Length: 112
Length: 115
Image (cartoon, rainbow over all chains, first blue to last red; front, side, top):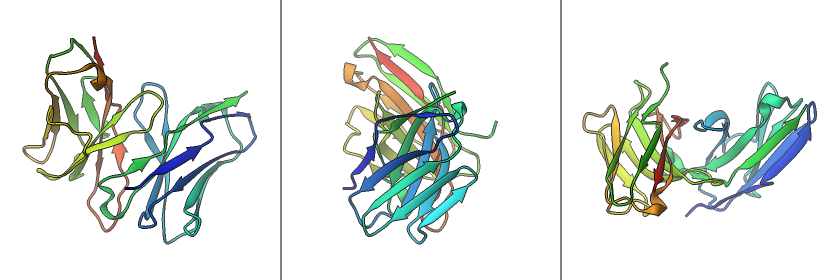
């Protein structure tokens, strides 16, 4: 089955700097890659997703890139703010996303 | 609030007891998912419904676990004869049915603690 690896497990940046989180997946049939932000005591919140027919997607300060050949995708957050501090999860799934596999998460800390 | 709603938010029980959790999905979503999340890990898929039909179950879903979605709206997840290892956050998500993958939207979970 699909295996998703995520790194780094922790990331600390200064406010205003950029943050990059990387994930790799094992199954070339995976074609949907969402990113979630999870704050303490809350469920994961979808922040951006990308499908395998595009290589990059951007939404304000957040962007995701996908390299299908290398089977890796990355989350980029620019101009980080303290409110961006949370745990971020990448995930991968195939058609109908019945069995979505998550990475182990990255704890991002943005220092004011 | 039109998001995914889960009840209760917290459940503390003794080992061996049965527990039941409820999930109310986003009203127009016909797909519903249950996940389990342990500390420091990402969510792990347990089971999936399309309308009232349970279409897929993970091997993580032992025979002590049962999920239902009788009318295709809310769902319940029951754990019988709870064990220490069942302590986790149980998350519910829902999605629309469309062409290809649709975004899954999560509730805030039920945190289960087994004494």
